[in-house]
Length: 395
Image (cartoon, rainbow, N blue to C red; front, side, top):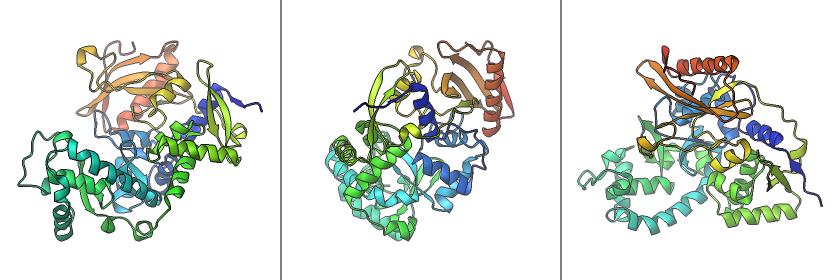
């Protein structure tokens, strides 16, 4: 049987449509509209770096430019339509997914009990009951409210005091939930006080959760290898994702296709049977500034195969060795990555230091104006009253 080939341009269009980056970023960006965006993405990664805007806020703004950060906080902390937990990193997740996180809770508990005894300082398991009792009796708390008589060590994530470690363990294992954040500090409470009863009391068999994870990942990626399905939520193992793909392929629920990379190389992937017939249109030609953690770019290897765009975070690279900058933002135009920009909020100004176009991208007057228009929109989003451009900022 001949395996269908999805050309690179069609693959990029499908992938961007699945990630909410095809249509113009219009819409109210709050309430039900914002919840629908997050539902479609599956989750939105949280990150504390705030040179211009936090990653989760920029991810949502890139898709709904009327979005403002309070709208996400309302869904999370007031309306309880989202909860915060872990995928490959901390994330905000639709509340409807909570019951499927129970498998993650159980697996994380086992993993932490085995590995954190070696990684963390002191016997954190001996503090579990004390921390639970403290929260049960006194209500929600932060890490600063527990273990006040314990040595603080260096304060780094690798050297938490035992009660702080117990607190994190209880969150990762599902016994506690994040009720809100103060700044970026997590405030915890008992899960039964945070998660609405209809979601708290729902249960799924492990096999159902594995199938939900694999099918949900394929929905959002459009096409994927079994390894990419496993990595999407970081819930299931590669072996579990491979077994699901084999069974689904045998049953005719999915098909194999070859996806062309930007270099023409084909990559065998799985997809839904109607993938070649989906009515996907070319993305809006609008220029967009994206978060380095945008879902469309989170898998760096996939982004390089589809778009020819190589990106790395240089936060931990010594300044003299950085190629671009501490925290530069990818820039997309239509279905093409056209460069990266070094910008930051400086008091009430947006300081634009440099823009590096990708190889083969010509920065004519029209494209520069389109980029400047996006920077003006970004400045308004970031609460900046002006934009300060460095000399010769287009490199």
